[in-house]
Amino acid sequence: MNDLLNKATRFLFFTGKGGVGKTSMSCSVAVGLAGQGKNVLLISTDPASNLHEVLDTDLGSRPVPVNGVPGLDAMNINPMTAAEEYRERMVGPYRGVLPDEAVQQMEEQLSGACTVEIAGFNEFSKFIGDEKLIGDYDHIVLDTAPTGHTLRLLNLPSAWNDFIAGNETGSSCLGPVAGLADQKALYEDVVNALKNPEQTLLALVARAEPMSLAEAARASAELAELGLTNQHLILNGVFSCRAGTVEERNLPAATDAEAGRSEDHSSPTNDPVAQAFSAKSSTAISNMPAVFQSLEKTVVPFRPHGVMGVDALKAVAGGEADPAWQDAPDALHEKLPQALENVSEWEALFQSLEAQGNGVIMTMGKGGVGKTVMASTIAAELARRGHSVLLSTTDPAAHVAETIGEGAGNLQVSRIDPKAETEAYCTGILEKNRGKLSADDLALLEEELRSPCIEEIAVFQAFAQTVAKGSDQFIVLDTAPTGHTLLLLDSTEAYHREVAKSADDIPAEVKELLPRIRDPEFTKVLIVALPEATPTHEAEDLQRDLRRAGIEPFGWIINRSFAVSGTEDPVLCAKGLHETTYIAEIANGLSEKQTVISPWVGTELSGTESLKLLTGSGVMDPVG
Image (cartoon, rainbow, N blue to C red):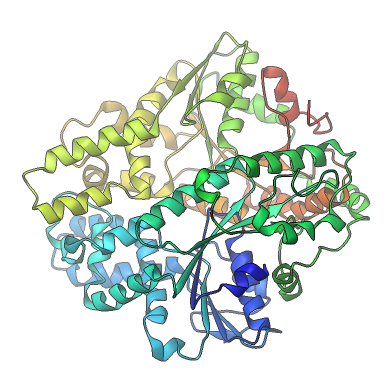
């Protein structure tokens, strides 16, 4: 990681999807800079942050010294708390002035992801933009970067108006920005600092997986277009077997030296799971998006226990090898039965799912946890058991869905194209408001329609139409509305503003959707998670949102577990041993009903026979 430490600017932002290691990488860089004698402030605004665990230091909303790292201070801004305070600051003046229903609409408008992000931006901007607060620090490291959506909003003139009072379009992202108006100059300074390559470096963190790299490439292009051009790619958790040179494994040339340091603790070549995992990483890296070809890179080798504690952070920053894990297979075999004590067999789950004879089954989870594979698996098995099944997927190619279900005549696969649905939805909204809004306000509405939650809302009606078919057969969906959208449904007025943008022509299936989803006999929601810290805790947040909307999950699926993959590789067994903590946390606490587990597999899934790999004993040949 020396190459990254040596080019560090005053401000360093880390961005990447949940679970890729933003927090551990930002902490490693911060510890490394402090080790060079620099004074460093580390700030987290990640809702799922475990910064205090990683640093083994109690943190609050003000900088405190990190135990065992002279020169490093850290603070943890909880954006959810900041969003609550921010929301009340925005809505409070209207209480008692406007009708209660109108105030409730405002509160729901300010309950989405946009408000959380803007509130986080508001908090860390106070530090970046105030030299009195940061004057003693050489570097400011932030483990979350603002999205392109937020930065574009801040550039639009109408975003600074008191839009929440006169908003006729039901915009959910405009009110949050209006609340920043009294500090507009501060934010302009912050945005200018972000765009200055001499002041700011953007670190894109990704796993050696196609979906993770594609998401990082999208963020890279979007933020570069907005002026954040000083970028660096961190490939985190790259696993390699001993066989083959660095070049043969297609590791980026810019970091061959760092990657080569992992040779001493790389895995033996005779374990099929290790071979498959290494091959998948190598293939993903060799086929990484073109935008990364010219970008400087840092490769961080796979660490089975993650990066927890100051010693581990120093090791990552210094490129040191992980300790040997020769005893891990025996330790895993000893601990695994206890962790699996409350984990059900897949057969029990299938029997409970098919008992009703029809209905809707939804797999729900954050991106990258395997919702489509799990939905496809369930659909194909129900079809194999003789049921009529419609699998509806948002997977653009629907490749997994079609190949798993190959040969099952009573399984149909349909696709909901999020891009097409979103485009049609946005076009309709803009046409309704063209001529009603000023040019500035229309530009602002166009930007709102690029927000993260709009795609979900756009898919909403297609989703509702599919759910309505569950009265006659099994409908399996690989997506589900998040808590925010479901809570919007609780208020008809909020629904009209946020989803329909009009009270006219609400389809019957849309009106009936929430009662259907809340009916546990009709709809069964399965939460999909990986046995790792961030994915587990993000899934916990999803469950909390569902419960606030009156929906109790039917069960949990723990996916891609090395603990039950059948591997005897010491490093991967150590990874499995680490997973047992989260397997137990889910099965013994978070999941109040059924929990099943699926192994990590390295083969391309094809035909219903491949279901045995995902739902069987987990000791089959994982590479076919």
